[in-house]
Image (cartoon, rainbow over the protein chains, first blue to last red):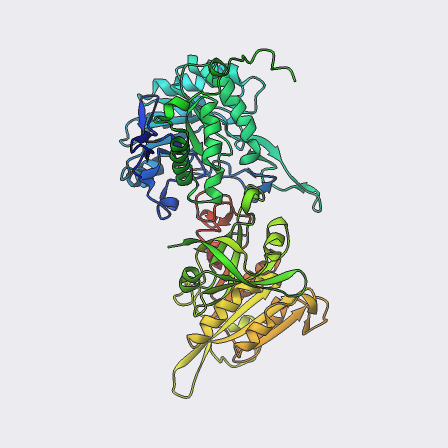
Length: 328
Length: 291
């Protein structure tokens, strides 16, 4: 088996290649921001060239120390994290990590965050000049940073303002990473599309909390954290399905993907690409297994091109609209 | 370079107080592990692989290189560790390892010469080492463990003894029932000092207090101190080591995500910013930490 292709039964290779906002991905499997560092930590476990792309750790203008520990707590089929965007700042990404990532043939998507619209714009401008960055993923959804992140992603107008500012400072495709912590995900998605987003990532983590009943206090140092892992997958699949039929730009689906079967749910819900996140923490080879599993599924189903499966479960294919199903 | 493997459980022996000794067949890990490193264990299997989700980091208690076995001392504290302790011999478990930075058994921390008079006023300086019959110097090393913190110190002591150090162990626990590692340390032909909080065995009181008393004895000044245990114990070790100018390494415990340095979930406070317990540690020079 070679990159992006799986041997089909008739000897014809099943194509896993997809186009995402003008970026050619050899397969639709990315690794989600914050779960894969800058790739170095996993380069020893397998050939990173196998990946469709990497979404690097969230980067801010200045270095951030992150939140006090504990930063992580396991919950049923999931984890709550409150890392708090610890990162060495955009200059360290450019000087320290991009040269390493340029050695690989994969999409490098820089995830950017800020505490003000201007800060997002400045980080975008700095990365725009750098070789080896395929796109910017704009994190307007981090639940663990006060005065930033999530605050930008829960209001359609503010979300659009951030996206417009970033668009003005870069020629790179801009991906808006949305928060699920909203009443109407479709309204936010439409708003960022209108502001010029070239793609939409769904979902960031769900805000949650856990309490140590013996100590009678919250477990996380930051009190609240973001829930990820298999526990959130149904929420993520639903949001991808809703947004994919409401916007024209491609959707990147993420939220609890552990296996190829999980990834296929997102693809059939309308995701053009998927990202493996929390699963990387559990199994360093998780993304690789998802890629191999997609090829195996296509062979089993006799499908030659993965794009045939994108949106297969959307209303136009299943003959049922969503209207009438939103009260429950 | 760490490995991922399905290890067969060769042995599962319950010790006291909910602690089990697990033997796992993992030849690559057994051959390459260094004291202080850990294995990251998947605590779920089959159809239930999504829950509990995260691996559990368990320090390597000892290795049997010839048999290709890794020994773990596991306290059944939560869902994951209780699942591990219920594994039947012959079953398999998914391991990543060896991970993390282990104890540095050579080199120097820059802590400088010991200030023995901090603990001892009248004694003549006996030095951190004594000469053996051939004139070679056998350095004296202390290992101090509290509760389950004893686990990584057995592997360390074995390697230290093998490389010619004189090792003394300080083992503390709540009571005689919960003391760990005595058998293993004794088999290494070394001096073992025991302290229990309730006085049911050995010194009645804190293990660091006992160590401080020993430091006041002539000729018992260690060239190096290694410690693992509850944070309060390590805090006191820190004060003793700093006061006496003893070069000291501690192994920390923290909730972990990936175990390989990517997720930043297990940060601890370092002098120059956050450190990753999984990848920058779990063993740190005392001077690297800020607490």
